[in-house]
Length: 82
Image 1 (tube, one colour):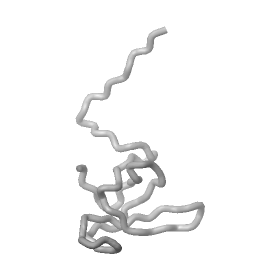
Image 2: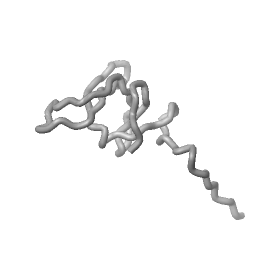
Image 3: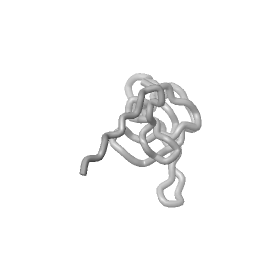
Image 4: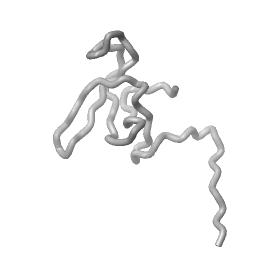
């Protein structure tokens, strides 16, 4: 798993919303045991939201909101046939 840092843009692996990590930590929160978690902030309309999520639920995204791509792997672009 890629290591997340404060300031990274993330989203749920299942999709939106895009959020910004504002703090890293180990919080027990509503779970029975401590796990690696991050505090995230995002907006719903103009209303700011903030809560803590387990890192296993999140994926890093680029600034444009697309999944982060490992730039060490070659990118394969399919050829077009007409």
